[in-house]
Image (cartoon, rainbow, N blue to C red; front, side, top):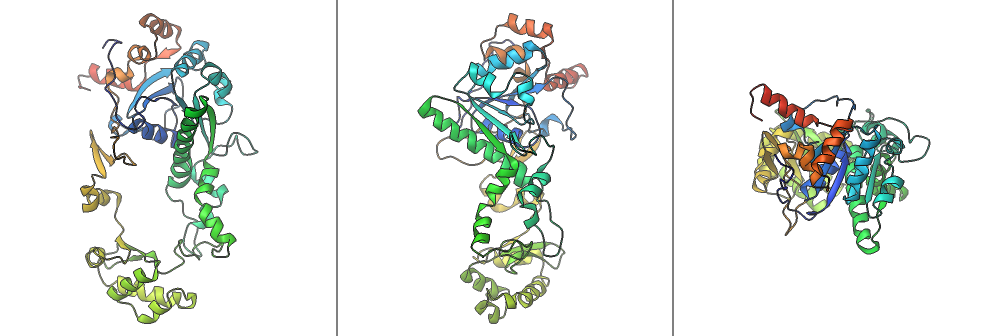
Length: 408
């Protein structure tokens, strides 16, 4: 396919924005996916010689690559670093998730990049931030949650802290904070004309998510003890209960009027309705709720409570959630090739997001991709000859399929 092939026009509120994503794991790829589905043109740069991810996924399920163009560059070569600088001159944003000083060692730190493009938004994602005694340490979601104090707060009273998948530090405190910071910097640039650097640390992002809890604790309304508070399973009316079929329902009737509706339908003795917030009654209340919930199946309770404001919900599995009538009615899950996944979020009244898909062949062809940034075919060929530019993993897979007689 020739270098003149044009991109299919993307839609979304960020249409026309160009983002460079330095390939990595976890929150940065999710941020790249979100920006792509909001309409940005995202170029993923894979490092030559970088180790393979510990979870190798088939292309149709590898959302870290969906919705992007892809280049594979040897950043250790002078020509490779220079190529990234040239690309950054034409970009609006660059996001990376390496440890501090890695980009600087490649000659691609903020000073070097902003010197070439002072209007660039440079988003940096780390576990502990760009400085401080822990800044160079390796870690994962559970590590950052542990240091933030948030992990201590999650779990049953008397039990161990429970990791909430990797949703809180990696994706909530990481990807979402990076996207929020990048978009805030983009707005500021519309006034100043200048770019800036975002230092997004997952430990601090997770802490930020817990700001309301810190406020409650300061006011004396929250105990720094796991499983002893309103929202951490300490309250019997905000917890999960096992049903007759060994599944679960989630009870979350915090407000008295919702709890009264719950008590009427369960049913529950009126003494508990009158004393909902009397902690002395909570052990008896919990036992009474557990006994009643255990007498029916999860779906029986779902049918009973579905049309009420009692705030009772069936605990659905990930697979079941796709087929819930509400989620189907809102098309909350969509097909992207062989993958059924959550739809792009949030939604916009006028701008239509672009569902990310497996990169097309032309999105992995270096000549095509680089032509969009103003490089000629002869320049691209010279980069291949120098070893600074290599075929992307996606293109190598595609070529291997063709050679084996399988259509890509």
